[in-house]
Structures are given as C-alpha cells and as structure tokens.
Length: 307
Image (cartoon, rainbow, N blue to C red; front, side):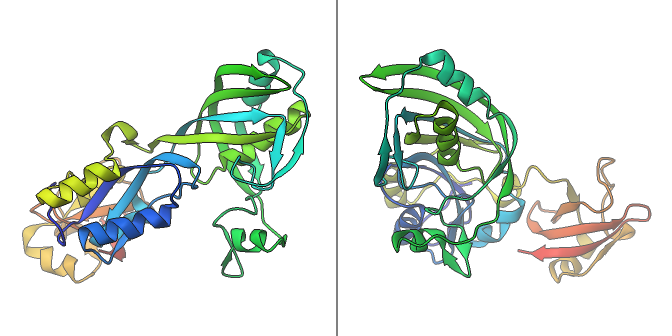
C-alpha cells in the first residue's frame, strides 16, 4: 500500500537511530506525515536502534492484534561495569575486574534461556500509579514493582573481546515481547560476579516484521516529499489472525458493529475455534473490525473492537 501526506493508514517500518526516544520518533513522524494518530507496537530505549513498528491513522487501533512475538535483538555488553540504568547511558555505580574468559561469559548468557520472572527496571516506561518508573528513578526514588513472566527462546554469544580488566561480549537474542534485555545483561553480571551493563542494542525483528524492510528517518522524509510511502495495509498487518469474510448483503450490518451469524458470512475456515478473536473482512477485502467467536456451529460472533 502507498499513501501520500495526510492520508497515510497502515503500518510503517522504521529503523530508529540511537539517541532519540521512541516518543521523539512518533513526534517526528506526526510532523512529517501531517497525522494526529500515530503510535507504535513496542518501545525502544534511547540507547537502542533498529526496528520500530509505527501505526498510522486507524491502524493505531490494531496494536492489540498485531503479532510481536518473537522480538529479536543483537547487542553488546560490558563485563566489569554496573550502572543505575543497567546500560552505559546511566551513572556508574560499580566497577570490578572480569577474570574469566569467553567460555564462562557464553555459559552465563546461555543459562538465561527459558521462562524467567523479570522485574521491570526503574529506568523504564512501565507505570506506577500512572507515572513512568523512570521519573521516580530520576528523583532517586525506588517504588514497588511487580515481576512478570518473560521467555528467552534463544540467546548466544557471537564475539568476545578482552579489554584490560574489563571485557565486552556481543550477543544475539530471541525473546518474548516485554523482555528487558538490559535486565538480562545485569543478570549475566551477577552470575559472573563482576557486574555488567548493556553497551548497545539493535532490534532486528518484531513478530513477522524485519529490520531489512524498514526505512531510515532520512528515507521517510524523502518518501514524504515525493508523496509515496511503502506501507503495510490494515488486513496484512493482522495476518496472524483467522479471517471471516462478510457476505455483501450483510456488509452494512457488520460495519454497524452487529454480531455475525451463520448466514451472514462465507464458508468458515476449519481452523477457527470457539473463543478466539477473528478479523472481519468486507467483500472488497477491507478490514471491518474484530469479533470474538462465541459459537462455531451454527456460527455466532460478537464484535470485540470496530476499527
């Protein structure tokens, strides 16, 4: 799908540079495209670069239905340095020597594979009483946080460099959405007894979306000037969901947010199950909304969200 300024609707894949926050990028995209409704499917810290999935126009309502699993990153960590933010942008809180070698460093990384209970870092956008944790952290306050389950599907060390009493290791990781990689890096430092901080991070993938397909901010600006941008359409964006196509005579009913019954839809895919969320599509292939399947035979579904 291609769109000009002010009419953009769908998903835009961007290659975020190191430095700005994800919110900074959203502000720039709003300004470039002349849109009020712009969002994203997952924050990247200022230190991080790489894939940022941007939602434009009505697509901002698709966030809960867009596949984001797994997240894949490549990064580097420094062994022998700890900071208050768990990355090199933070204030150094401790230094020590790393006396082991690459074998021990890799073993510590690999040991993190599997399901873990992870406490959100104080320097994060997670909210406590409606306020982001990083604001408390900047005031030197620590607040109660709830741990959550995350899954590290695969992690491995790709390079190792000894630098005096410190060492730096490169790694690649595949993990569930919501995983804080810098918290995992801090765990590596704890395992090795020397402390560790994240020194770089780059997101390579989010669900089915890949960094190789993303635009840089410069390419976005150039495409905006030409009035043509490569966007992922609304229906393609939710490819992870089963789809139910409405018959033509019932299209208006579906657009009005009414429940769907057996005679209103075309033949039902056999993989559709009771209780799942399906994308409702018009005869012309336009996304109408999302329904929860209440019954399979005879079919009956209730609208979950209308876009």
